[in-house]
Figure (spheres, rainbow, N blue to C red):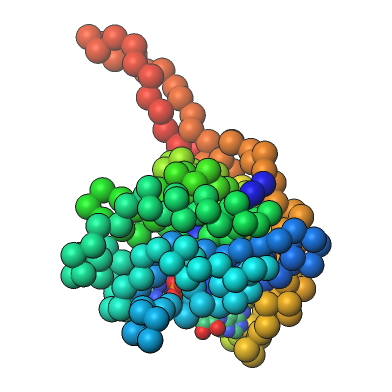
Length: 255
Ligand SMILES: Nc1ncnc2c1ncn2[C@@H]1O[C@H](COP(=O)(O)OP(=O)(O)OP(=O)(O)O)[C@@H](O)[C@H]1O
Ligand SMILES: C[C@H](N)[C@H](N)CCCCCC(=O)O
Ligand SMILES: [Mg+2]
């Protein structure tokens, strides 16, 4: 495993916190690790150009100091959907540029943790989505589930979308965004039963957590690089139906 792609059930679900925790957890067991945020919106203008908080934090956690332009090849100022920000800037987000930056980082470290932007199906252009990045980089996917009312639907929709857009889900992390969430354990049990990948940890709500503190709640060793391909969520069943004059046809239906 050379790297991981971290996606989430939504923007603000904890992708950066969990990416930092995964970097620290891997560094603690030996490998050198770099972080990457291929596309970022909501960047600030600084003396060296546009800078994104997520990208700066991932870069700072890196085992070596990588050039900012490799960590964050596409940086946009407006805190809006990236395809809108790119359009307003007259920039086309292109996979080859992301691939080239990733390959350079991958040549400098044992692992690269790549954080998406928003959720799995965020558009990056007219025919490009966040979901295309891990496929282009050959990276397995970690899903961060921001624990709040509604997260079960968001998690299962994302899992199904990962599966039907060619992603390879190898683990998920529950992140307690809302310390007041009711029936947290029952929600976790439901997610564990329906998400067809190992849970790498449950991150409680923490005041200003450090990456090493976050690492204490994460278990990247549980990553299943040989994910099952039989979806737990539903198994398609087929039955044949013969109608007068229509001959025999097979109808797929979900269980
Ligand atoms: N377990 C937690 N305990 C306390 N605060 C948290 C926790 N997880 C996330 N946060 C806070 O919630 C906010 C969103 O988290 P984070 O930036 O990691 O989300 P994200 O998915 O990376 O967002 P974006 O889509 O903008 O990249 C941040 O202020 C972060 O510090
Ligand atoms: C600006 C902020 N940093 C977010 N990462 C951008 C999230 C884009 C979400 C797009 C959408 O799904 O509507
Ligand atoms: Mg982030």
